[in-house]
Length: 326
Picture 1 (cartoon, rainbow, N blue to C red):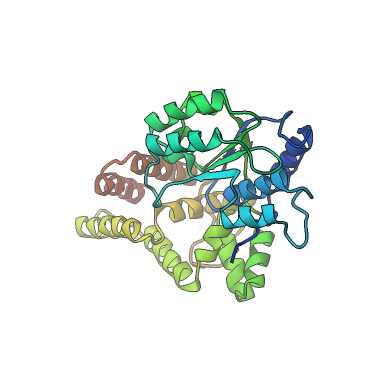
Picture 2: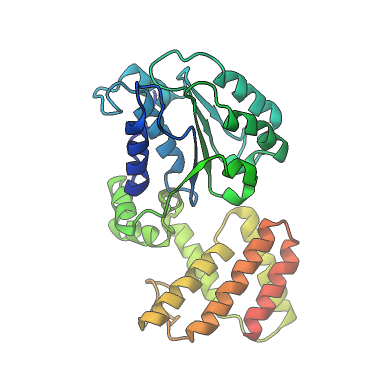
């Protein structure tokens, strides 16, 4: 059964701009709007659903408002529309190579079957190898006919400047807390659990759905342990270091969550709020905001180092030493 791409949640500003772009087209062929757009923003905030929704808007005779859905909308939802080519990593985190880009270029050179432009959607565009991005430049510079190319990424810095410069950038922000909570409740989540998950989701609907009560409890235990770091016992330091490395491998709460917690403590301290979140309640938000900011900067540096494939055990141990001494 196909899933018809709905209007994405909580991205009204970005979607309004996409609607204006579509309305600027003349003759239903995509002229009068950018031929390449970069959808940039955090993971799980609806960038790729927005790309599918815009494809519907460009291909549907009723501007994606058909009810029941027309054949074009159904095919886009099913990923089988002849005029909409999708390029994505074959597995999460796997690179997109030059051969796959060459095949996309070939597909984009074909004549449109239906109304509107031929569309290419590149999901996780930051996974394109440098060679693949270089090959992609020709398509960006000389798109066939009225073709529209959408690059979707949570890491624009992973794209060559020559690629980014040939695209109009459309930024997507986090989804509001109330909207995320409403979606979770509508999906059957307990209201209290839904609100807690929405609070911790960092604006990501996708992340919110993964935050079960068990995972939230696991996160709280991590934060309590990190806040309790005192002294410089080598055995305790090694234990915490190993635990954080293992958490990262297992996809459990880790440094990103502790960074988020620290930023919330900074906000609460600046506002004079006596506490942060609902748990762990034992941690007050009365610390010096400047010291918390130094901590946040140190955690962010560590996260960036890990993204650059630094030795996880070494950089995490150094971080914990600094936190203990700070």
